[in-house]
Image 1: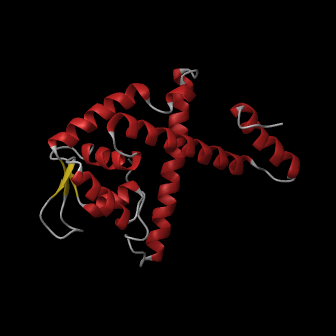
Image 2 (image 1 turned 90 degrees about the horizontal axis):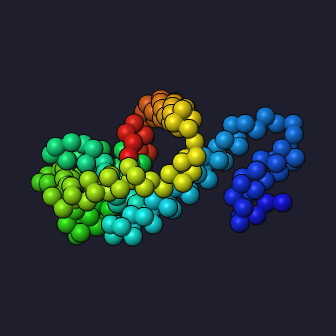
Amino acid sequence: MNTLGDPQGHTLGIEDSWRRERPDLDLGDFLLAIYIMRLGRILEDSYDKMCRKRFGISGGDMRVIFALRRAGKPYVRRPMALFRALLVTSGAMTKQVDRLVEFGLVERLAGPRKTGGVQLTAKGLKLADAAAEMMSTQSPLRPGVRHLTSSQRAHGELFVRAVLQALEATELETEEKKGSASPAKTPTRRARA
């Protein structure tokens, strides 16, 4: 029926089996969430492998490099802004920054750990630009979208952006209502990698 060796069969198998088992439900949003989560896992794995092979750092570390690069000159962000932008905990961000400091790709600027800055080094800037150029032509998403028309791609991008912005706004509203949520435990999703 559906095998992992046949991705189309597996994807269709998910839908067919759910529609067979629960014909009484409108499964549209549920199935879309499953597809997006599967897509995210596939892209994350492919992106991480690509970053490790081509640049010697993990995909997560590359997202830190990209977050600093897109900040513009002088390519600095506060640690709190980084972990909020990248949806990780402050502890995870500390480990990533420490690792990137060891590689000579970033440096910590003077100030307390949470209020000081993290800045790209010249080596980090060179890596960020090389990786951005490579990703513009060899994105892990490319094999999945190369058969689509430019109109289909544009509509897909608009759809994903609209859903993401709506979910981020909903999450932000929820966090604001809680009022006491600690940023270190609940990163906001206002900025994206």
